[in-house]
Length: 492
View 1: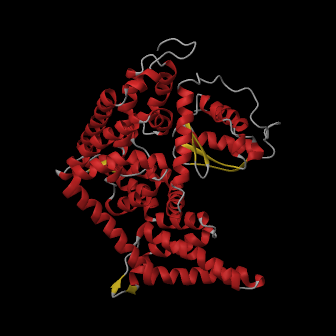
View 2: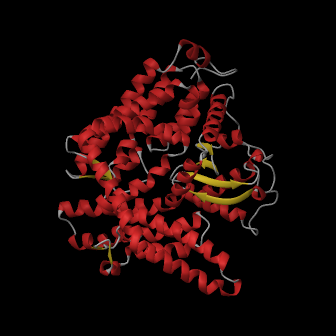
View 3: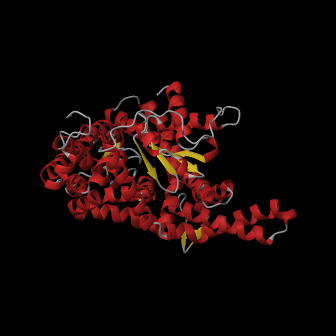
């Protein structure tokens, strides 16, 4: 979208979330605007969802507004400008009483959205365990890195295609550093974000983690072996930065304030760096190697079953907001093998949901409101943005959520079976799914083979999700409740 449209969306969102005074943090991931709000009771969720640019909302540790990959960065930037003291419009701190766009018929689509909201809140309360909250914090470390992973992954794919065709060898040589530079230093970024997330000084976290990728570590011997630059990867960087955070806090409590500026950084870098060299790099290296071997073995020996399970269970992980805890595993596989074989399998969950949504659309042919919701959310679903369909359609309907998982399982089994037969398709970056994943595919048999396997998985997921939902997704009572014209409406 243009800057004018992004600003218009930001201006529409601001009063509906309680105004500038209610916002204490603004961030975004691949598809969602993430707001830290002081008082969530000031949010007008119904009016937000009625905005044409809003694909859905998610209440988590932050209040999340799903805008899609094309708009989220621009809208976030414009919202930040609106929150600047000089730019904040009069009345921005209001409570959202400004005129809102017309809301769709509340007897169907809005009622389902409300039910989805309640189910999401209940699931969040049940799953707010220390372990799962820690996984979400770890995911927060990697989410800001996704745009760079995508950009570098696409450049790597372009370089590989040119090399296979024998075209522009000089350009292929130049694209190598462009695509690989970020990945060679990703440990530094992970260390920086880890310290930031856990309350340390970000640059100290990055400094300690940088030890892992420094070329000079090849001269250091630990546990009877010389270290390798990058050994331990993102797992080691995460551990080193967490240690740095605790060292910094411990030192700061003991050191007089007058010496803090000198002693605390020195102790943090010295002890954290030595611990990384003589412990963390070796241990994290073993863990990273085990992850790579495990993924390879799983696909080679149990690909069909593994794909069935992973594709079928991924939607519940999305529903619980825990799917981002897989990012460190994807990143480790990309570092080691150049691509992650898990992402194309997990992406099949979205395919099952798309097929399910089409079946719901056809089965509830008289429900104009819900059909309008599906029409607006389906394009995003095809591109891998699944939250609008999850929380607006399949989850609140109940049984269609299960049949969507069946579609994901079928698509995952297709991709997994291909890997078991020797044609494993991977992704050179993380973030996109659905059709948006095609530019990032990697396959040892070539790009066309990878596209054929992944495309076959999508079609299998679409078809299985559609058939399972169409024939088994509704009881007679459900059809009687929802397959009727909305009050005052016309059949769709």
